[in-house]
Length: 223
Image 1 (cartoon, one colour):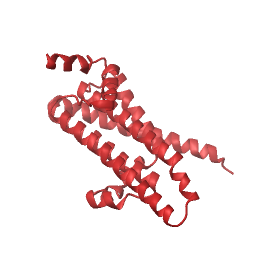
Image 2 (spheres, rainbow, N blue to C red; image 1 turned 120 degrees about the horizontal axis):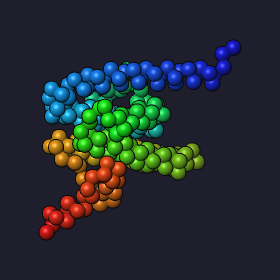
Image 3 (spheres, helix red, strand yellow; image 1 turned 45 degrees about the horizontal axis):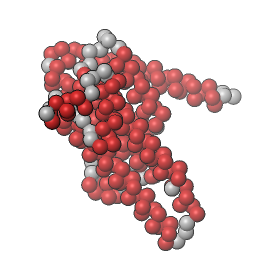
């Protein structure tokens, strides 16, 4: 009888190898296209990474809640069609999504043979941090509040359920707005800069990429 651990390892190994092979094929096409029309292809790259970021966000909400909230479906009806795309099913499993991001970060930041622009590197790191933040918020809610629903019954349980749906809906809208803002600013050729508490996120990305701190730029504008 085949050991279950061996099967899991074999599946993961096959998945990793397949993933790497597909990424290599895509990157070869990327290099050819980027040499012909770099600005056009940069916009295509931005569109692709933000599309996948929003899809991952939607899957995170759906997986944690058990379904995609009806209020969000009424606002974004196209998500029903996106969830039916088989090629995107890879984004259902958080561990595979995390592995995919690690591969992308390795290629973007540490592989000098692939000439990604500073704008693309910045946005890839930014999305990675934002997804870590959104997963942290979802995990805290699930740990401290979702599991407490079992102790309620009747009307109180219904109220807590509505609060939970409202939380996930607001969480989705908040990060969707952040992604939309970052995408729009990046399409104009500028690096997205957040304010308030979120400023630490863009400052952290700038620090990792050894970009001059945004504070200095803001101070010059105020003078």
